[in-house]
Image (cartoon, rainbow, N blue to C red):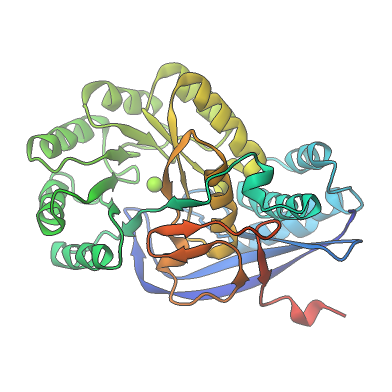
Length: 364
Ligand code: MG
């Protein structure tokens, strides 16, 4: 199965409600899609969101990386030589992790198709379904309480609440949400780098004292502040999850060696795809650290690639793959089934996604 062409297209999908974090506000998914064609007629798909505030990648930079650097390096290579192809992908330009992730997942899609199995089974997994949380955007308290109640009514028993913009006022915000949803709903708190290390210790201790009982607190401090992250991790009982602090396998090793966090959030757009993400899974497993698999604002192609990874590794004990649940429409056919909190894996070969709009006019 030889790669003959790599092309790109854009997709726009409106969100059910605007997505708001300490870093940004977005009202639609506007991503770059990648299609890898082979000489057998088999086609693989990938996707990358332009998450400039986190990865530095824009729609234009992702497209240029794919078209000008990655495609020339990979066309003519054999899909079955996954090791050679993935190393060529890693070497053809530095950084640009979103572009690499989009191509990596398309290659895994094709590789699994060539094996005749769904990707999670090719990766050695057997979990046919996984359960995701749902993100509650940072908003005035009554809106967040309403959104949290609605999410529970939609069947989500794990909520990821975005905070980090208002210091100690976040404690009252989270108390209100806890009171609204009751004690049985799991609350994950994501500060998106919004606090200093000392502020984080004060706020998390207050959450513990107030009985908010968060399952974990994600990325309390600035991405580069590994010392600050370790400071927080060592001073609170609530587990601390590293997100923006860990992009690459090398970042993961640095964090694991210092025990700077209790958990690692793996996202394909940070690692540059599944090939690199598997290295973080292996390293975390060695250190006895569990992982979450998360996503940016992605639609079903990229989220499904992450779901296949999550379903394949037992070190992944937490899933934050709510992208398709946040979208108003699903423009694709095939792939895993997203129904409320449950993601049921496809048993069709590859990622399983077949109908992808946007590429038609390029076909001759
Ligand atoms: Mg996060």
